Length: 374
Image 1 (cartoon, helix red, strand yellow):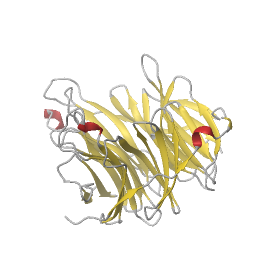
Image 2 (image 1 turned 60 degrees about the horizontal axis):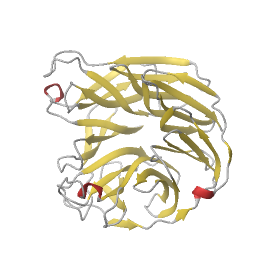
Image 3 (image 1 turned 45 degrees about the vertical axis):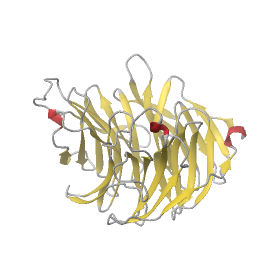
Image 4 (image 1 turned 120 degrees about the vertical axis):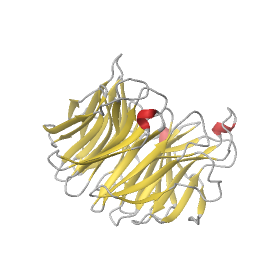
């Protein structure tokens, strides 16, 4: 199938490693929620929606801007599995539509190596509207998960990823759009032009721009075999799709030499496209134009950038491991704060500040929502 044009992206590095910044602020407020929180989204009117898990059940909650709980839902599947083990559900992505409808998706577990994706839609008040899930997961015939999503007036777009050991050629990701009523609108295979379709590819996150363009990020392997040497020959991918699912452009971040690049998170505001990820040497944040041209790159040591958010007014928030960073409109580091004993996984921004989710790394994980005022 014909795809868009691939462009190799050269790195223009901002020396963020040596940029001084004032001490980071403490969170304005913190809320405990379940055993882990995996994703967060801003709700029209100033509320905050979070998704994760509470024990073996999926968890979704909506908080007011001041931290008051508005509603909470848990769910896990019932019934038999091939292993006889009680099934589990963990939410990994959340998206909120313009009318306040909440979409949440993630992975279903059946006590085996595989699992299956699920997707649930809730009304603004928390009433369930529809539910979808992968076929065959109860019989361990699926290994897929919803890993990221975003919503607009047309419905929800999800990133679905299959998983397995190393860079198994059978590991394939795709992007799928659902109408507001749950009907599949289209599916994009997330294939990179110039790289055989049988090679492993993964999609990690999606975002929808104001005019409807979808941006998806992930990685692709340049080798077909999954041995220990070849698994490091992978590049990060950024892909733009039309509202109808047609590929517009695809950009590869990396080289043809043995490298290890992966794009974990994406956000967009205006013509600023932000992508967070990791390489063998460092974590990174890249800013591109919405036409795919690289503008600048920030690099830091440590965990990969798992969440990025473009705030009104030009500020940028990025989370990596236990670190939360705020960059100013010009790209300079405004502050850096450390969430001691925690793992920060995702971030969302609005006019009032930023919302960060993750968990406290105790013997048993405790989910957290940290709110920072702008």
